[in-house]
Image (cartoon, rainbow, N blue to C red; front, top):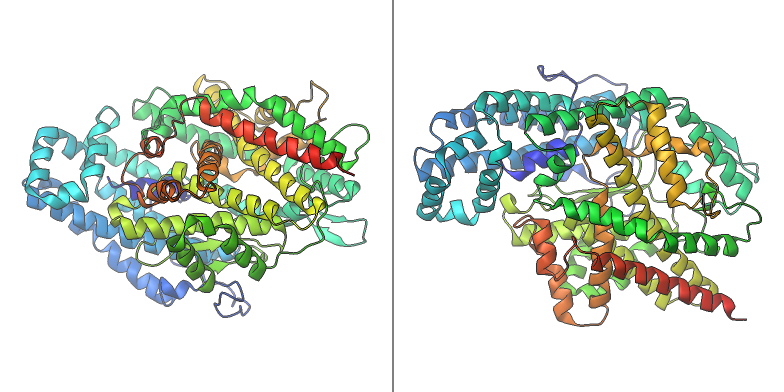
Length: 632
């Protein structure tokens, strides 16, 4: 099976049952929205389909192709020409299906409260479920034909080797985990249930959770939804931060049982797939698609735990710089160490990003300029909009789209650079690779985006006008390491722990998840060492993290910041060879396994060295900050 099908089933939430696709609900007319434009921060979905009606027509036309593809079942390996023809038909289906899904997902995420848009997304997901069931015989048929026969076909048809060769090798590699044709059909149908819990989380957290309202010291009343929590947890006023935390996490705590049952169901689905496919555990199942050694995951956890003294050093520095008397609290993590009275509106964010990323070369900057000039982004928060930020680049023949919730602060500008890194990665990979080999792994994707964050940080530090401004950016660099390396690894530990408990047959309730998460929070934040006090109210935080509905996804942020730090350091020497090594990594797309692509770039993520280099960078930044603070 082509990698895109697995990617879409993992990345998107599937619908709740295998049934005929529903008719779209009729909502009340929506309020008028601004026309698509880069200046207004509104994306143009017309580049995908001119209208909802055009989408529906394309959907129905593609759905009618499923029987034609299914007809390949009995003739797939009859000869090399037939195999090529069938693979091309499957590839064409997936390409158009991903375009359909992209439109549906983006339209839905503009406002998760509009049922018609949610149902359109469900129709796109159902299309992939039906397609998956229709081609469930593919891998078993390739395996039954055997490597020798497939290799002979590849010699006869150059395209089988050049375009589909990596995919065919991957299918043959999966022989121990490929089931009979009948069982594969059942597994494909079961795929409709795989993302149900994620769908429930998305709708509940964005559209139905009754978020509380607090009154800040300024007198402003704020509804503490996810976007507001992200914004106001950075407030300089400590009492404001405290009440935002207590209100936000107190509300999530009210639904601990429900959200625990939801996540436990998702974990059970992972374990079902692993056991049905004869993996030793869910972690091996999750890593197999990328041929990722389990040693990488476990090495990350080991090295981050060994580096906790450096994290605790940062927290002590934070306490000192914020002037906190008494205990450092969990709500003291997010405010800037130095208050910078400076806004970064979207135009400024684009300009600074272009300047900071200049070391990546003319080709890279040309793509970045185009992305910023075109209406490819949905920028600002609005009611019902999906929280956070992401890049969606699955529509191969169109262009990447970026969703953000931009707040005109430095963190928003950094997020812009981050997501733009994904976008340019997509553009580079598409030019260098055919559709079939353009689908890169998250493992390399996050390297591209975190690289941008680091280059932006270094640029802002270098060009800071005052000592205080330099301290601000250095502090943000430390916060990136905390949030991306330590925090994401803490998430990875939590995810591994809840899977291991479920695999051992232990009950996995919301209360138990809170207990596990609380132990991790205390260890990572040094409660036993007197570094930070963790209020048990905040231990419900696991329920808020959407990445737990992605199968062992978060560890890749932490490995990526490790690789990105090394690559950024090399690029900033000005050596064009180092820049080209990085760009070659991006252009490779999905033409090789990510661990091997990293090794080609001179980094072995299964060894301690890359992680120790990142710790050294972190301590160097703290040395510089302490030296600045010692100045008059």
